[in-house]
Image (cartoon, rainbow, N blue to C red; front, top):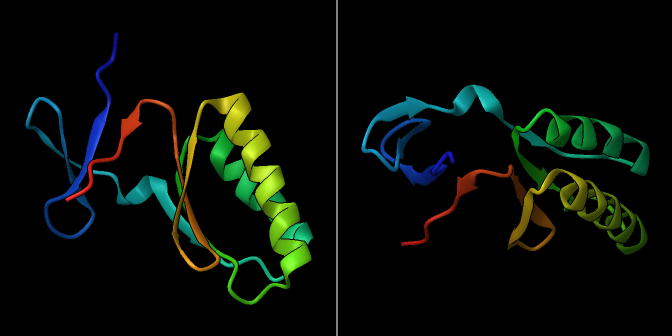
Length: 103
C-alpha cells in the first residue's frame, strides 16, 4: 500500500514524501479561475487526471460558485479526492493518496 505524500513545502514547489525524499510536484498542480460554470469542465478533467487543483472562484456569483462546488464534490467522491476550503471562494482539490499536513 502506498503511503502517500506529505504536502509540506520545502522550497519552490518541492514537497517531502513520507520517506523523507524530496520531489517536485509543481508539474501536477494547477490554479484555475473559472469565469463561468462551463469552465468547471477543466477543473473536473484536472481532478480526474489526479492533479492538485487550486480553484479561485472569487469573481463568480453565489449561484455559480455553488454549482461548481457541487460538481467538484461529485468528482471528488468518484476519484477519492479531498476538497479543502482555503479562503473565501478559494478551494484546493487534493488527489487520493496525497496527505495534507498543517503547520
